[in-house]
Image (tube, rainbow, N blue to C red; front, side, top):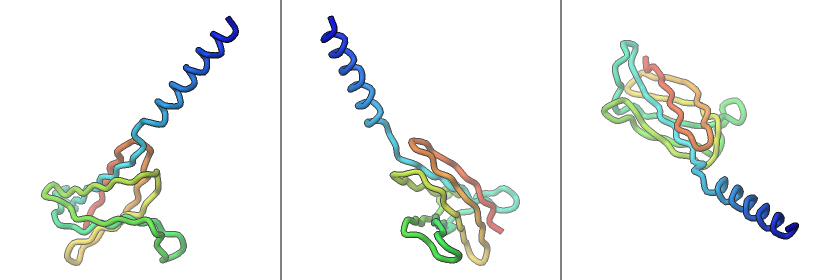
Length: 112
């Protein structure tokens, strides 16, 4: 009886470990750029970066261009906090986004 309980406990623990290891841990960031009237801003260059010291950017960064809906998405392996910088023509926007494990986080910035 005692060995049966140990065996079942071991199987239960193994199942919990395997289940938690296999879940999706990727972090998705979707940035939406809008103008001051709430319209989508197409072709804006969007940069995500972490500032490690004043005006010094860290190694992990990403960049992309917004689509027709004014959106661009990024995928990271780990949670992080990034500064957002978006530019189109002479207009720009700044913001911040906090990525969460296994979730999609959306942030909207106003380009002006």
